[in-house]
Image 1 (cartoon, helix red, strand yellow):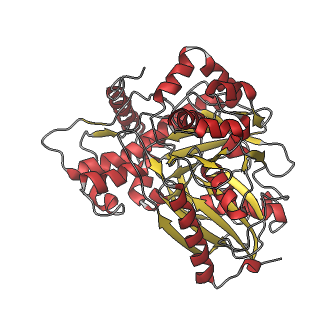
Image 2 (spheres, helix red, strand yellow; image 1 turned 135 degrees about the vertical axis):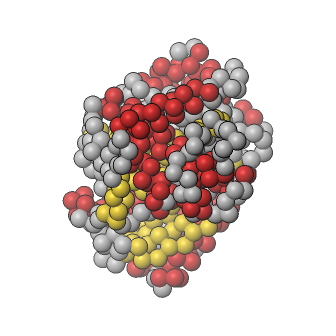
Image 3 (cartoon, helix red, strand yellow; image 1 turned 180 degrees about the vertical axis):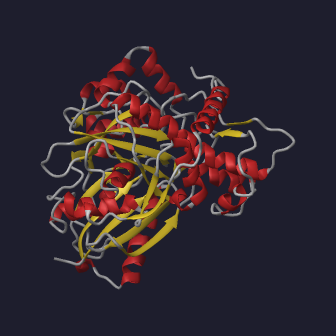
Length: 501
């Protein structure tokens, strides 16, 4: 068998290709950013053609860096920003419209209407999701209703939908229209019990079934199609792993047992708790989602707490406020002060996700006085990342009855030691970062490798996991309770700011 496994990681702000060895160690990578298109307030789009071109470039460059050819790869997996919606022409392969990103809020009226007439309760029961701008279903409906010719093309069977995993697989294979159960579970269109598209849910959005990709396991020995010889891989490599980014990170963190959880810090924060083969319905503002499905094995489910803005709040300090020149400077600036000086920042730029689900919320910085400086705002930004995680951890404990013993973390902000220390302080439990912090790509590689026997089983993957650093909580219970109480008070200030019909 070939010596390595590759993974395409198509994220919100960039696309990368990473190559791993049998020990789960990084061999090579290349990464490129793509444009964030914001036509008006609340709208966020990507150019699907640019994403495909970036994918081709990162794959070829990483392979060149490692001096590898297609024959050196045992398999390739794909992981992706999940709810971001692409609709394209089956005949030409051209998108009808830009990709509508998961952060986009233009579908707020669609989501609100679903809840007003009772359809929202059906979506919660069948799909495990609340009606929200976050998910794909409303975005497809918006494209069908607002882009000339798409409704007619969909009725003819010419318009195809996919999250970015499907878009990339279509292009890599020159025509395979597939997705996996984790991505399908983020659309509001898949029934969690049948793992198939649900006709009643499709009718809520007016979406023809012919638009939708075939749903496959996350790790599939039969594969998702054949890589075209002229494509970025340059040869026939098995495409056998496909997971949404947060589920991929859960696999990369080897959270294979019920009760194990991870938190990924990226553009937003996404915490998943493995609930095993049991479907746990949330009563506290969390999502019920598919965690993964390996081949013919039963699906594994998870509770998820999705937070829209965390790492992107640091980008806001850099790009809009310009009080830092790079994301890494947020740590040094925030370290100049011992605390936030009474400042609380709730970055509800596109509403609040879990556990609130309030599209009417908008961002607020509260508690300011003449005493405060840019350092206090920087520290309040890091604290906001951690308090939002505390909101989710508390909701998970109420839904599952599981008390967190340690939080496994990954993603870009985990290199910020101050932020991870604050996270331990806010939660009151240790925070643990693995040696390989890019667990999203690693999880996609694991899924692909398991499918072809490159790794024998999940126990072999567990042996690859090693801790890089652990942070212990230092705050007293009184400090923790006082800080979280004021955070909750600040959140209330952000609500009812935007009128939603």
